[in-house]
Image (cartoon, rainbow, N blue to C red; front, side):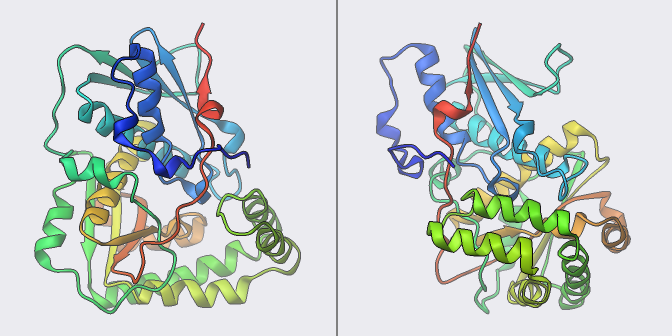
Length: 335
């Protein structure tokens, strides 16, 4: 994976080109968008800046076709990037109007953000969220045996103001035990699929997860040729059991716009959690196999269509930042 000479995670507010052109300013704000989380760190997005708007495009070349055959995780990833962008726009005094999935000749457009003169200030975007963008990480390790208080959970629940989405946060032991069993089943099924292992190996070998080059190559070989069913199936539930909170975002449907907005909600929860010293990890494999997804949906039928499960808790460290594509790679030329 190509890397930029400057670490994208070292993005500084003071580098904002206050005296530059509007396009210069908007391109700078895209740097905040590309720090969003994405499925397997695939970063399946591109942006077009110009004519008083920013267009967010799906980069289908980075679609995880085996793990995500219906593009649910891709659209959620796009929603996370969109939310970062909107938070940054507000922080730097820009107003905006979002059009989801516009009907245009370019079917890759997930959202168009028109820049308007009147500044937008959303109660869903406190200043702490903007500051958390550069500090947000996904922690895949074990979490501390430390409860998340009801007060903190209420603050996280406040991240949702979308009538088409439901947010569940629970520390119920029985619920987590049932989810553990489904994760064991999901890991066994997905990792017994050679195509799934090859796709995962390509992500590892491409450096999506960071780490030394030699380690990435070794992991790629192990996943593609040896299989890691036993190791992963045993390890993932242990990590889930160590988490004090299980979370789930559900929607009234699995429509494209709802999935993008689910990604926006996920990113708000991510950032609100980060600002409170919490860690979060999506556990999307629960929805990647039809048999498992069907059983999982039965557990949470009242919340609507399950879109994104995750675990939440405290950890000894926030986790390592993952590599990011250079800004030049994600900006589309304007005509």
